Each structure stands twice: as C-alpha cells, then as structure tokens.
Image (tube, rainbow, N blue to C red):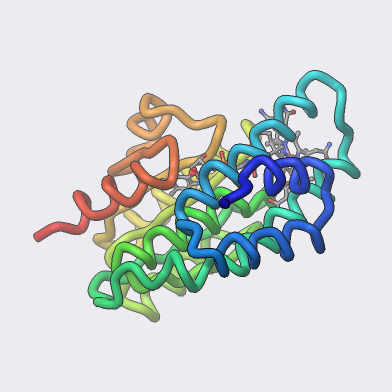
Length: 209
Ligand code: B12
C-alpha cells in the first residue's frame, strides 16, 4: 500500500536516503507519481515551512528537508515527464537574481515537461541577460520566472522591462509563494499561477494559437 505518511515524515525529518528508498518502493508498487509528489513531498515541505515560520525549525532543518525532497523528486521526474511526449512549445524557466529557492520552480518545470513543453531550466540566481540570451538561443515561446523572497520578486519587473526593450515578443508567467495576481499585473507579466497544476493550465493558455 502507498505509504504517503512515511514519505512525508521522512522529508520532514530530512532523511534523504529514507526518502529515496520510500519513493522508490512506492513507485515500484505502482504508486501514482503525481500523488506521491503532491500528497507526499509537497505536503511535507509545506509542513516544514510552517514549522520554520513558528520557530520550531531553523535553517539546517530546512536545508536537510529540501535536500530530502529533491532526492524524491529525482525519482519522480522521469515518471512525471512520461505523461506526454509531444514536445511543441519551448519554455525557459528560472529563479530570479539573488534567489536560490528552486524546489517550486523545478516542480513547475517538470510539470510543464509532462504537459508537452520543451523546458530549458536556467536554475537559480539567474541574471536578466541570461534569460534574454536563452530566450533568443532557443526561440522560446514562454518565460517562467520564480521568486520566493519579497526582496527578489522585484527583479522580475526588471526582466520584463528588459524583454520589451530587447523587442522580444514572448509570453511571461510568474510565480512563487510571495507573489499575487495583482503583483503580476502590476509588473506587466502575462500570467500568474499559485501552484504547479495551475501553472500548466496558464502556460498552455498563454502559448495557444
Ligand atoms: C525550502 C526553503 C529554503 C531552502 C531552499 C532550498 C531550495 N533548493 O530551494 C533554503 C534553506 C536554501 C532557504 C534559504 C533561504 N530562505 Co527560504 N524557505 C524555504 C521554504 C521553507 C519552502 C520553500 C519551498 O520550497 N516550498 C515548496 C514549493 C513546492 O513551493 P513554492 O516554492 O511556493 O512553489 C510553488 C508555487 O509558489 C508555484 N511556483 C513557484 N515558482 C513558480 C514559477 C512560475 C512561473 C509559476 C507559474 C509558479 C511557480 O508553484 C510551485 C509548486 O506548486 C519557504 C517557506 C514557505 N512555506 O514557502 C522559506 C522562505 C521562502 N525562505 C525565506 C527566507 C527568508 C530564506 C533566507 C533569506 C534565509 C536566510 N536567512 O538565509 C534564505 C534565502 C537564500 C536566497 N538568497 O535565496 C522566507 C522568505 C520571506 C520573504 N517574505 O521574503 C520564507 C517564506 C520562510 C519564512 N517564512 O521566513 N529557504
């Protein structure tokens, strides 16, 4: 039987080997990758976030839990990508300058690939010029930017301005915990999504036609 509680607990405890073994076992037993991701890994990292906010967890615990989550993601990634093999639109994604949070951005990337996008993930702490270069090189259809800090989300505004200046006609989508639809509108982004599932819907909508 799919034991999501055990997976959740081992992410919360930062036990990366245990997470790897449990996720491998769950997948081996035919567990649904999407369910393991949402109800196991993502549910756990949300608990970790709450504990951090309440002062029950500190940075070392956060780092260990994040590493444990990534261990599980590594196993799920190929399964999440299998959903749809038709690669048609190109999405460049990255976490903006000054910000090294990459879990949410990576999940969005994996889900976009699963939905048939060809995804170029530039990683974290991405400078404006690198976004522009990658968009040009890959003739991208969509740019997805992530920020988890109130200080770094402002950097999205700069990227969108630079795209316009460079004359690049590309759809932009933004996300990350501190963002809102209102902020996205204010900085001139074409779309905002609060989670990976709605990010896929929004992305498909933006590049349609
Ligand atoms: C894990 C974590 C870390 C890890 C990151 C590891 C990694 N590889 O990513 C580590 C320990 C490194 C870290 C560091 C720091 N962190 Co931190 N971190 C978190 C934590 C607990 C969870 C973030 C996370 O991964 N959530 C899970 C994912 C799945 O959710 P998500 O990122 O929101 O993504 C979803 C959506 O937002 C959306 N989405 C995300 N990106 C995109 C992009 C697009 C295009 C779209 C459409 C959608 C989308 O879809 C995703 C999937 O559903 C949050 C607290 C929280 N609850 O958010 C704090 C938090 C973000 N961190 C915080 C802080 C302050 C820091 C540090 C400054 C701490 C310090 N003093 O050093 C540093 C910053 C370093 C830096 N320069 O970036 C604060 C930010 C406060 C603020 N308002 O600015 C938070 C909110 C904690 C808090 N309450 O204080 N952190």
